[in-house]
Amino acid sequence: MDDSEFVREVYDASYRRLTGQLIGITGSLVEAEDVVQEAFVRALHHARSFRRTQNPEAWLRVVAVNLARSRWRRVKHWSGLVPRLADPQSYDDQVADRLTLLNALRALPSSQREAIALHHIADLSVNEVAATLGIPVGTVKARLARGRAALAVLLADSRDPEANHA
Image (cartoon, rainbow, N blue to C red; front, side, top):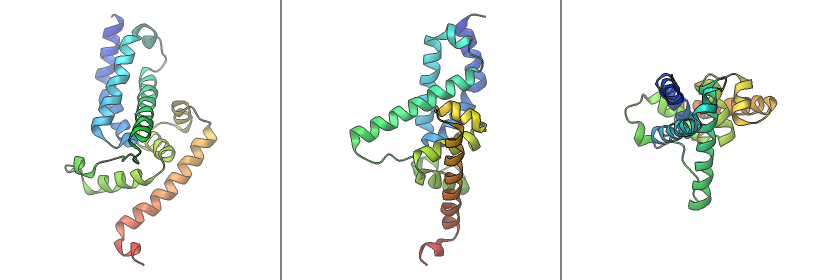
């Protein structure tokens, strides 16, 4: 099997899972697909070294997360607008609970959202999240704790509309 065939096998095995994980970070299926596809393009350009990585899917995830971050920074810089994590209209076919969760995730700071998405949606360990984001394990734990606490409040508020008016 040559290097490009190896990349194709990893693509077949990992594309859907990576895209699903990146939706939690980007909040957009289109954006998630774009960064995952770009990660695979980079894998093809570096197929020989990509093939030698211990965990090709983790390598792709790191590249895709970094691409998502770069795009986010570029949008913030050039547009001057606060980027939106999710467009609720793009999820019309999703169940209400997923919409509620995506809206709550959108309200979190990006650092907490990334940690929560990678740990709970991508099912990475705290150590893997730290390696993916290039931050200390303690920072991941703090972001997870703060993010969970904020999500609990946001999700409780979304279930009890009267709480917002009290």
